[in-house]
Length: 130
Image (cartoon, rainbow, N blue to C red; front, side, top):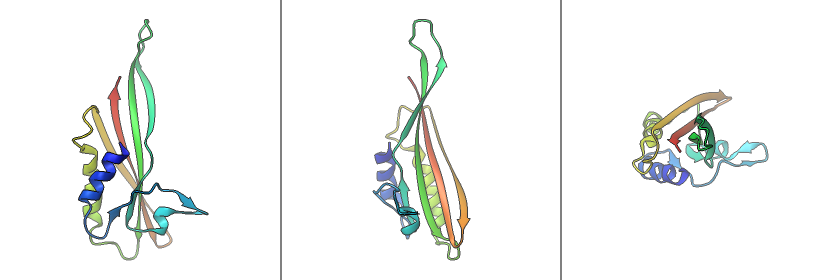
């Protein structure tokens, strides 16, 4: 899932904001996305299963939610001109044609400002039924 999203973002983000292949790790107290502003970082997918319908035979119907978190930090004082376009590209990435088994795809983000850095923390969620 992360690979498909990353490939899409690398191909479709244009301008000053780009996608990074590295994971959003931290060096000391500083996350990589704060060090390298205007780069989109995606974490490894996290999968969670919820029982939707319990069946006596033990073959429950299970909803699987795969979540991929991402980060983007920009200078809050000098907002990039292409930021709105980049956020739209991030949102559209959830509709990847290569992700065909999901019946529901969601994307949302929050923006926080700390000193002179605006950080966008976003999340992709893909739902499947097993």
